[in-house]
Image (cartoon, rainbow, N blue to C red; front, side, top):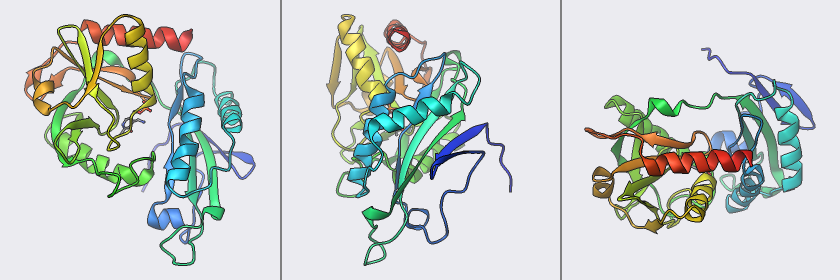
Length: 286
Ligand code: PMP
């Protein structure tokens, strides 16, 4: 089996390694039982917006997963910048700090927080072209509640559910899947948060603990409100998205990106999306 990985540098156990460096063994708790958390930040056009918040969040995720956040936020930031410097200036990069449990605790399935290990990877990942747009569909899968999964962490173990939602949506000709929570309110996409615009007002699901209330989401809401755009955080149904004037997404990977098809209905990137994207880019370079 082979896969072409883009250029990758990882800080692990005190040094930088190039390529897809092995980080776990067959007996590692995380490789067997999924006790890992991560975060995703970006470098692009020479900036790293909200890098500090992504580093802070990975430490919070570690605590939620029962791990020990042994890397101070300042150290994550310093390492991220050192990693970025290993690439040509301006390269679009994904910055991924990560923690995992190495050893089991006394009952095997429990993890030993004292065995927390970590690494920081930086790798090439081009910024998606917003002109491409994306088609979305309602997923038959749902977001778990906090009683069912560690939804208060950005945990690797949450993503097999997102993966099957994406595979199912791709199979029906869509680029991404909209997942509802267990009450049937729209939660998020498999890879990002979701917004709609209707009559010039932006709406987005109110955080209820079932989905990742993203850093880009919070940033974009703040920027839009400062610019005088009304943003309503509330419970939204799938029908609200089907009837929207605009649908767009926020997330670290693509930042602010348009949805150009909701099931059979074609949409254009609209004025609220364009404002949100421009405000984000101005903020990132500001
Ligand atoms: N939801 C999911 C499932 C995600 O993977 C992401 C990307 N991290 C987001 C939302 C957006 O969060 P953020 O803006 O913090 O990157």
